[in-house]
Image (tube, rainbow, N blue to C red):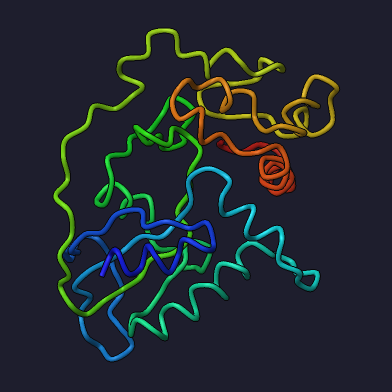
Length: 224
């Protein structure tokens, strides 16, 4: 089934981001029928393949165009698979997607606060979760060391051109308006780009700008 899902997602630049059999502590919702979920399959992206698919499809001006595009793609898929779906952007209550991701894949929190993947680095995201009543076969999780543990230099902590990183907090006003932040606005966060893991998955400039613009529309100070 995971191969079937992967093949259906591929034309949209989306990928299977792991799967797990939930426990009560995972806070997975029951299905509409009242049945417990047997398997959670996470869907997301790594790199800019998703962006290339999303950006070439004409669509009306929407408030949250990427979220609405994801929902349109997943809506067709769940009808064909007999599954249900939930999204990290739906709420409150918001589902604990990062907890689910740690159950499904070998990710770890980076010094920036973002979760790092040993292959994709910081260039990935979780977009949806497919919920199945069946207990589907899922791959065994192999233990993998967190990439940041072996990184002595930690260039992500010194790359910000504004030098306004305090722990994992970025001052968004300066990033959005200063000349020093121009490169970040055009190519993506310098701290994120400084990470040596997953360089081949680094977001293309247009993709990075899309997310930076959304990020900079947020509160005046927020975690990255």
